Amino acid sequence: MTADTKTAPAGDAAEKTFTFTNDQTGESWQFPVVEGTVGPPTIDIRQLYQQTGHFTLDPAFTATGSCKSRLTFIDGDEGILMHRGYSIEDLTDKSSFLEVSYLLLYGDLPSKKQLDEFIRSITYHTMVHEQIHYFFRGFRRDAHPMAIMCGVVGALSAFYHDSLDIWDPQQREISAHRLLAKMPTLAAMAYKYSIGQPFMFPRNDLDYAENFLYMCFGVPAEPFEVNPVHARAMDKIFILHADHEQNASTSTVRLAGSSQANPFACIASGIASLWGPAHGGANQAVLEMLAEIGHKDNIPEFIERAKDKDDPFRLMGFGHRVYKNYDPRAQVLRESAHEVLHDLGIDNDPTLELAMELEKIALEDPYFVDRKLFPNVDFYSGIILKALGFPDTMFTVLFAMARTIGWISQWKEMIEEPALKIGRPRQLYTGPAARPYVPIDERK
Image (cartoon, rainbow, N blue to C red):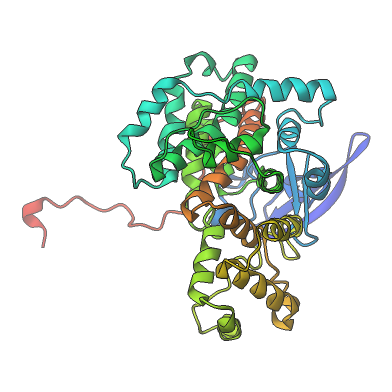
């Protein structure tokens, strides 16, 4: 089978096609080449099986576009991340998480009036149904917070029946606002439950990040004042994790949503996918690596081990599967990490001191610089979250909180797509061919 790309006239416009030719039979088939706003051109192979009788095989879907999307664009070679055309650097520098949430959900940055109305809606949806408090009692105290989040978020569909009609635009919007608003409340409840402290009700006078920190670290017995440096870092972490194209959890949400499942169930499926250590657990793996290194005096030894291809040790939090250059989110979060550590001081925490020393050495070592193995967003987010006082079991929960707006926006975009159909990947079957059934008393 050979292939060739050509540009052929199509009416008044030029249309690119991709031609596949069977070298044995001489048969040829043409498929349209579709181009997005930016990024590589795409061969539309939806008619491949009907025309050729062949499927494509693409394990992990690394060369397959599963959908069209207007939300997020990544150029891994150039280190670019954009939401709706706005660079992640501009958004983290000039916007809040809720402003970015509005952008992802509705397509444009809001006016002052639109943002005020959106913030008001989210703020007044942060309370959860009182019976959900009792729902938590069914979990063991030592249950992983992500296990709790999977169950409780999925159970929201049992409490909010009035917004489950996915074909009603108003109900879709109510569900979107509810999920965005209630996720911090549920995440804080999962944390409080795990440490045996009473749940803290949300406060309408605080912004999104402030409210979350208050619900996590406040107690009823005394007033709690949110540190503005910590709230600002938290808000940036939320922005930087809001959406990231068709990653595993986002694809899971879309696939679940393609079956017309309710939005709460779809987001719960995304949480389950994110829970996997290969996806959402990287920042936790960073702290586990730092614990293994133990002391900054041991860094040179572990640096050499990381360079040895025969040694299983790897520097976690360095390099990225998508970004072949510097992770643009890491550059933003690096500044926040240093700001938080400066505010708290790192002299009393050897792990954080170790992390900063490792960062310094890795950024100067030619082995890592030449291979562009720079610290990524997980390296810095893990450091910040530890510095703020979160246990590592909460790291993926916070990731899920931030990514919820991306999941919702991707789900909403998919539901509103006229050509929506249930996802149904194909396979290359490699099992036994048809064989006769042998009665049990004749089997050897």
